[in-house]
Length: 383
Image (cartoon, rainbow, N blue to C red; front, side, top):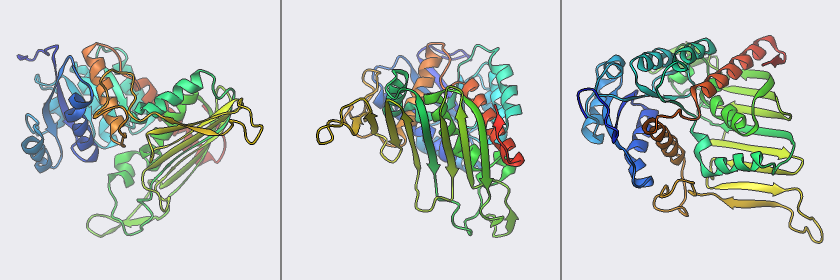
């Protein structure tokens, strides 16, 4: 492959941003061949960019990247790159995505799609006219347990939706002395926890239950000032807590919470969905299991067969040979990232659009903007 032309058996990746998510995506790229046998393409980690060049050089030396770029544009414009993976802070997404698409690159973008809905619309205007493959990193759709939850809902197993709740809980902002990172700086993130953890919770409920109808939201900054990396106290505008009361277009009312002040929480994304025929529930701390309650089962005598049952989803993906070391071995947090990136590369290879799409990402951005609008006005906002 060479001369700037992509071989059908090789996809050359350029990663922009080699922090936590850049490393996570790198792990996924390097392990996809272990999880998915007989791939029709090879994965070439062709280039990496990070503002701290030492990190990019380390990725070259230790992880096999082809080169360390001096700027995002060097990868975006590079003839040796087929697909751009964007892991940079939110405010840099729009320009990188649009430039990559205009240069004919396929694009995989971390959530949120952009810093605000106006930027997301700019991205859509370009991406929907292009022939490249694009996909969002909303990877919690990609566990067998959440895929199975979607099947049950679509098959009518819970019946008519009545209520639900989805919480994504961290505790990283409980400590007032913790130095801020870019995610607590509204200039880089565009917001706080709603734009950080919120997209995952909002997207999962959108994936399972459909579109939102209206929202009433409240956000909270727990400490108005925090130390920066040099110890100087700086003002904080990015929220630590967002609680949304939502009504769904197809019925049902729910609560969605994104929090970094949930004392005692680690990385806990959990949901419960209640219908008139059944219920389902899931907790990211045990991603191998989906619980299902059949409300049509008999409850007599002695309880009959009614009660939550455990569905052992584990690594039982539909794709043949897609479990390492096997389908009965536990799946961890990073497994969803592996499957999400496999899906993206498979779509690139087969010239299809990825899912979740940029349109999905823009829709979630719209819902978050309406939530901020509700918080400011202290009233329900119709979407």
